[in-house]
Length: 339
Image (cartoon, rainbow, N blue to C red; front, top):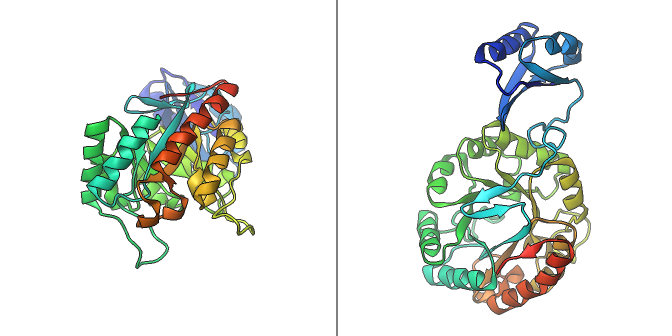
C-alpha cells in the first residue's frame, strides 16, 4: 500500500503518519519524488488501514493496491522523465547514442574512439575502467588510470563519460570521474550496489540482467530511486534464451512494456545482444523503431586487437555509416538523431 502526501505536508504530519503505521506493526519506506512524499507500507494486511490513513492530515491519496515499484511506475508519474547527463537529456525528442570501447585499454585507443564517436554524432562516451569478467584471468580494466583517461577524453571532446561501477566501495571514486554510473547486467540485483548508486548524485544507467524479468529490472531501479536518486535510465541488452546464434536474445518487446509501465527512459544495447558486429546495425535499427530513447554501442579502432568484446565492436568507419542509416528511422518515429 502507498500513501501519497500533500506537497506542502508539514514534517509533523508526515511523522504522525509514519508513527501510526509503525505502531500498527508495519514497516514504512519514505521517499520523495518531485513535490510529493510517498510512504510505502510494508507488510501483510496493510489495506485494512486505508480508511484511517486517508483521514489523516496531510494525506492526499491512499492506494491499497500499488505496484511494488511506485517511484519508477507510471501509475504515480504519467509524464516521461528526462534524465540529464551534463548537457544531454535522455528521454527527450532526440535519440541519444552512447558509444565507445568496452574497456579503456590506453589513452591513444580511447581518444581515437572518442573523437570518432563525437564526429559521428554520439552524445556520450562509454568505456570500462573496472570490468566484471566471466574469467578471473581476463582483462579486468585499468582501474583509476582508466578513469583518468576517460576524464582526459571528456576534456578534449566534451562528451560526457559513462562507465561501469562493480562494487559499492568504488561508487565514491567513480562518481568523481564519471558523468553517469553504469550498473551492468551481472550486478542488476546487487542490492548494496544499487543503494550505494542511489546515494550519490550522478545519473545511473541500469542494464537488465541476463535472466531477469522486466518487473525485476524495475524493482532494481526502485532500489536506486528509493535511496534518493530518481535519475535512472533502463537498458535492454539481450537476455539468455535457448538460442545460440547470438550472444543474447534482444527482447525488443521490452522497450514497449517498460515504457508502458515506467516513466524512466529506455535504451537498447545492440552490441551485447548481438555478440557479432555484423548483427549490431539491424538490432540498432530495430531498437529505435520500437521506441527506444537511445542506444549504447561498442566501437574500437581495431576490434581484432581489443582486450574485451572485440567480436561485437564496430570499426570506427562502420559506426559512422550506421549513424547515418539511423537518421531516417529516427525521423520516421518522430524523433531526431543529433549530429
